[in-house]
Length: 270
Image (cartoon, rainbow, N blue to C red; front, top):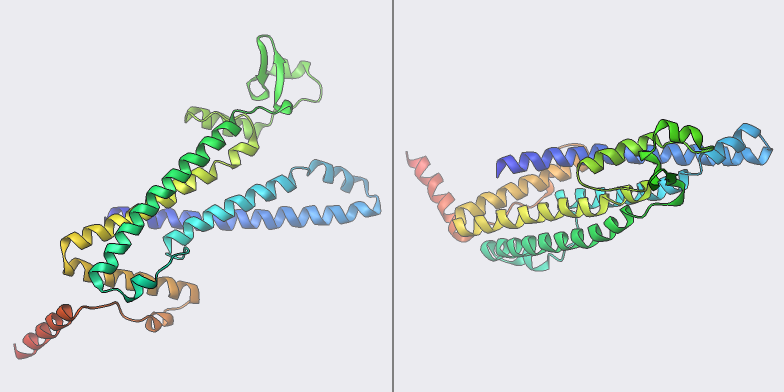
């Protein structure tokens, strides 16, 4: 389990860096677009030309917002900040509490997988729809502009190969994912992040189920680990380690308390 936790931790860090990169790119594109749009009111020719060339900006901002939403949802799952009804888990004893965590984690994981399949099917349909601006007429009929040769592009006027998208399209095709339009490629984030969220929920559920089966000692260790994790999250949000003391200690059963007390007394006598 420790190996999977390390992998999940590294993946969460990469998600955080990607969120920062997407957010900064959104701020930059939105700022430049707004500035150029204001300059066009003064009939500046280069501003008019640049605004025409930045026709993709609004579409990019919409797609980037989608990426931020699902990357943030995955981060919320990692930090246990997702929306949850935890009234019973707050007041339940140790074993019933983690039994509920196990059941809810496994069920939520399969629900996320079902959503990934549903949205993935819809995105697959969008990926196969080829817009007119990416289609040319070749010797064997209609073909994608990325599949055109240099000689074919030379014969066509006002047709340029989208180099970046063609590279992404080739990589996706090598992975078995056909892509005909850049807009649908951005939508791949939806089923992919649902898979990541489902794996995290399953990890939570399976870890809790294993602790329930192993007995009270394993549950106490898991409870202590959860408390330490929450303390680290609160400290990271606050920017220091002072918030760790404000989180109440993990629940202990009377049996576990007496065992701890007995061990301390025995150590004192020795």
